[in-house]
Image 1: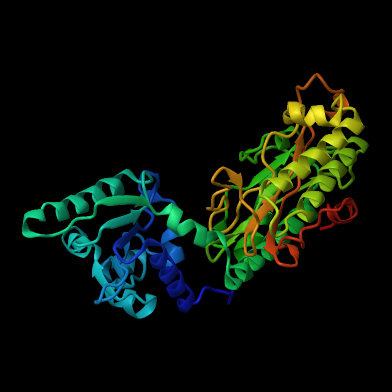
Image 2 (image 1 turned 180 degrees about the vertical axis):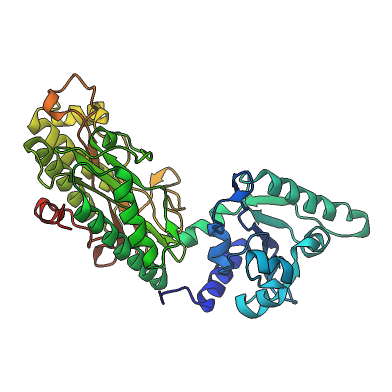
Length: 440
């Protein structure tokens, strides 16, 4: 996979952040911690998104410090020292020398020296920007470093006077994707779509949900995704009505639908796709009717992902189309406006129509600004994912509708010329799906 973020782009990101916080500030961001899986094994390490966004540095036990205007250099990185014995066991380390030569740090120090060196760097800085209330150990360390500067007040050393959450300074930058970021997300979307096509092709009654998940993971990893972007959902039958179903261990039955919500993560960027299809390759009349309502709602919602429109508009659009369809099918009763205002539809559609997408599958960025829904701007990436879920025990509807869960999700870039669907290669029309399911 040749698409990547260049060292120059990482440097531009750091400069943009420092311009936002000002010359009297310091930015401090820790690397992600390693988490234990069980006993003496750990989960695969994945760097903190904010940290990686600014550095491209993927090792644990590291600390980023940005010091705008510092004569000795603005980008300081604390990291593990080189250790041949540990590298034999656990892999190569950049060390302070590599942090400078390979990652563009102005200066780098071993992480073991952070308690003595960092207070020196903070002296004279009026403000500190850092993650807040995310890791208890880091919160304690940060307080200790600031207090170490305060202890030198009698010697004329000025300590930081205010502490700010990094989110409001950094996350607006992450919300707008560059051309390089969108290229990576397009590649992630393409290979994720291939995984969905493969899962459709091998599906048939008698297989298990985890068998389809295995096909997804195979497609993701063979193209360079080290992991899925989130826990894959493969829900057959009534399991599709559980929004965050992850057991993926049930047998697929003839006549049921199966909902797959899965995407790969490529070079730290996520894809997020949901498709729903019949296990036997043919929609029943009820499944087809509900599917057509969801698809119409999704297409209408995508159409209004336009520069200047509000974040809320795709959701309102999807809700209106869903309610129109449910009224037509008799699953809801009353006037359209009353059904929407009263929220009667929420027993069938209980979630929002999308979320920001990027380095995190539920990516950073405020949805409201000063109490108003945010307006779309070029470079924003979001999901559009309406659904309908008729609970298997819902005795307010005819039995023929019960246990049907449908969601259709695509990843969409806001552009000056209109919405661009990154995940268009994943089939979603009834004709495309019925031609593909079970074809392997």
